[in-house]
Amino acid sequence: MKSLLLDGHVLARLLLGLTTLAWAVCAVSIEQTLTGVMVLVLLVWMLNGGVRLWRLLLLLRWFLVPALLVHALFTPGELWWPGIPVSKEGLMQGVRVSLHLVLLFLAAMWMTALLRRGEWLGLVAAIPPIRRYVAPYLLLLPAMYREIRMLLTELGNRWRLQGRWPHFPVLLLSAMRQGLRTGRSVAAALWLNWPSRGIPYAGRRRCSMPVTVIVLMMAGMEAAMIARWLT
Image (cartoon, rainbow, N blue to C red):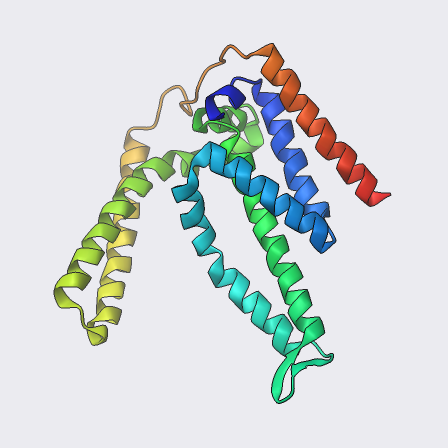
């Protein structure tokens, strides 16, 4: 599915991602949001795999739980249970907001997965004002990702050896300092070895016309749904 979908033209896939993101923003009712969540879970799972999708969804709990609690506890309305300061209206509003956050997150994942990394870099390189400010950060990301993964692995090993909560703030502070030092060294190495040809990005690939037509049809269907919701 992923290799077949990525055979479409890059601009068609970008248009599909943008319409999906607009579709997620315009979803208002719970029925629309639930439908979008179920469809995007299936699509993102086919592109990125279930393990990666599950790990990214776990990160959302730090946003969903506070949103649900704030709306449930501080929205006036009929109490859900006597003696418990949770209103039915607040609970429903919290569920609606949480589902919308999940939908927006999945739409962003879908849009990111539709283009290869080199194609994203190519789009950035094609726009001079954006390239001027964003290019250094894009070039820093791969190296920083490798260094931070090694740093987190080392931090986990040190925590397993010590394993005492009183030592955790010191361990965290040392990891932050080491991360800042790593960032400075990686940035200095990038500056000394700046690519002479600018951002390395993937060149033009041969695209499949049938796949491009299918992608454009999907984008058109989403645009039609958005127009129907807005009217």
